[in-house]
View 1 (cartoon, rainbow, N blue to C red):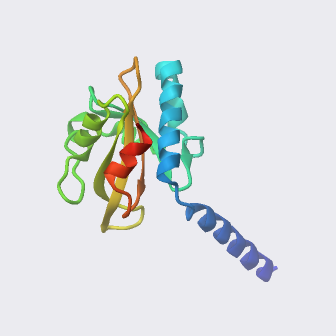
View 2 (cartoon, helix red, strand yellow):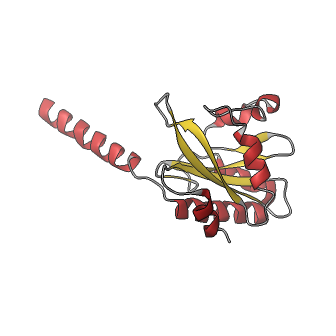
Length: 166
């Protein structure tokens, strides 16, 4: 019986870590952000619930889609509910590990009709040292919302990435 429990535990560990080890690609990020923007364009505020489910379609592999309202300086859709309660006066002043106000950069990039990619330095889950994170963001037409998702990547240039959305 003990061996069975150990084997079951190892299989569970392998399955969970195997899935958690899957990395999203820049192309997937781009496509999921567009899909999220389409949901909000069609459903408006009612569509926000789709982004708050940590096991929903907008949380996959090692990333997720989130929704901002840059005008009110708030995160309004996120699979970690703690981010939804983040005070707006603090949200705008969040800095990455190099001192960049990346939320401001994200809101600025969203003003481009094609959206844009932003680079900043943020620790991966469970780590303290920053890694390069690249995030795609786009304005949802006819709404106050901006939709984004990001991945950690040290190789892709912002110029290369912006070719995806043109």
